Amino acid sequence: MRACARWLLAVGLTAGGSLAAGFPVVAQQPGGGISAQQADIGRVDTAIQRYGQALGVVTRLSRPLGAETECYGICFLPSSSRSTAWRCAPRESCTLHCDISPPVGDCR
Image (cartoon, rainbow, N blue to C red; front, side, top):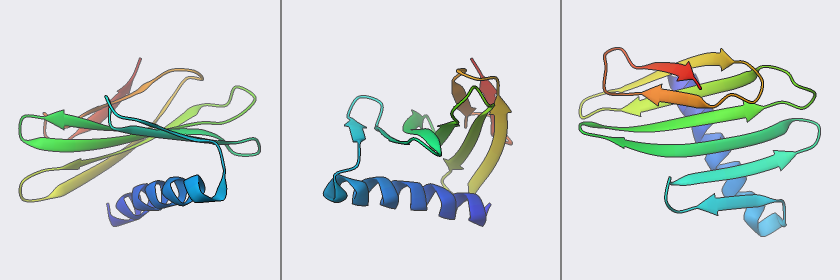
């Protein structure tokens, strides 16, 4: 769990620092998301989701050349945090569900 939280924090800090360095990063207000892309790695999309009793952060890594999409999610609950990781087919979206216990992810 802690490793996933550190990874999500690193993605957020890296993307935030990329703004000053001039890398292509796009922030989006409605979904609370941020995106960044690098040719050798792929594209990372991160979104914040609100639930009745939780906040969720889901990160999607789309690698080049049609590889599987890697998904990482963490749910911040009133008394704890839970993380999960899963894979989706290329070009599918990662969806995190923090309103069930334990939290799960799926693909769309």
